[in-house]
Each structure stands twice: as structure tokens, then as C-alpha cells.
Length: 175
Ligand SMILES: Nc1nc2c(ncn2[C@@H]2O[C@H](COP(=O)(O)OP(=O)(O)OP(=O)(O)O)[C@@H](O)[C@H]2O)c(=O)[nH]1
Ligand SMILES: [Mg+2]
View 1: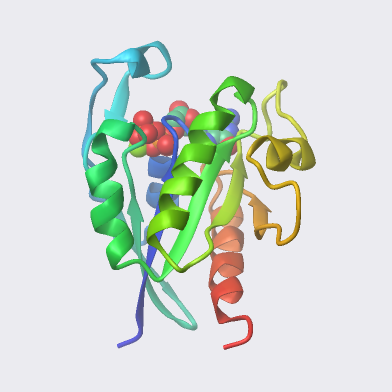
View 2 (view 1 turned 180 degrees about the vertical axis):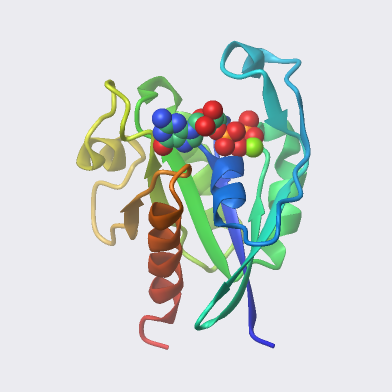
């Protein structure tokens, strides 16, 4: 059976758990717990280990794993990265003061994986959303090669499936 593992990473509140839940066909495993740190100012609960769901595509089955957002859980990022075939980093484009944290997560991945992560812009419906080019520059992408990017609403299944298709096609480019 052709199974690919997709890792969905990103900072707290980026939309990782929403993405995993929206894409899943057979329910979701989540580890959502009450936030006890500065996350509580942003949202009441947070992922403390991982999210998991599964989706069946014409090209095969995708197992989708969401990470926690906090750096203290980076051992989970590391574990999940080891077996991932596909990488997506969600970046909320309405929180410019947190772009440096997104950049750090991208750097963490780049240091440990040969796979270039696709950058998924979330919260683009927010009134304070910044344009993709501004966000890319803020993430340190100022010269070629630029990453593959996609705008995604983690709450909308068509949008999530569109992002998934791009992540999968990106990996298969040139293979
Ligand atoms: N309007 C809007 N809301 C979004 C979007 N993406 C996620 N949300 C909302 O943002 C909140 C946080 O989403 P989560 O999916 O829990 O974020 P997360 O990345 O899993 O967060 P942590 O587990 O705490 O790291 C939820 O209320 C979502 O419904 C988006 O693109 N637009
Ligand atoms: Mg989560």
C-alpha cells in the first residue's frame, strides 16, 4: 500500500490541528489540552503531543500528523520529522510579531530534513493579513530558491485538499 506521511508544523495557533481535522476522513486523534502558558492569551487549548488523521487520494493514502507549536515540544517535531515524506509549515499571516518564530521552525526543519517544506499561509481572511511577498521576506526568503507556497484555510476542506495536492505534486516534481 502506498502511504505517505505528511507533517504539518507551525507556531501556536497557525491552524495545524484544524488542518489535520478538516482533511481527515476517519476521525482525528488529537492531544488538545488546556493551555497553561502564554498560549492561553491566544486560545484556551493547545496540542501537547500530536494530531493524526488519514485521507485517501487517487495517488494513495496520506497519514497527516500535526505537531505542537511550542518550542518546548520540539522533541516531537524531531521525532515526526524523521519519518515524514511531505512537509507543510503553516504561517499565520496576521501575526507579524511572530514571524521570527515561524522562521525558527522552518530553520529547525531545514537543519534536519532534506525535504524542502511547503509554506502554507493561513489566517489570510483576517483584516490584518499581510501579503504573501511581505511574509516571505519576513521569513528570510529574499533570494532564489523561493519555497513553494500555498494559501490555505484550515477550516475549509476544499482549500485543505488543494494545499495537499500542491505538497504532493511538489515532492514528485522531477521524480
Ligand atoms: N479565520 C481563520 N481562523 C483560523 C484559520 N486557521 C485556523 N483558524 C482558527 O485558529 C484557531 C487555532 O487553530 P488550531 O488549529 O487549534 O491551531 P494550532 O496550530 O493547532 O495551534 P496549537 O496546537 O496551539 O499549536 C482555531 O480557532 C481555528 O478555528 C484561518 O485561516 N482563518
Ligand atoms: Mg494544535
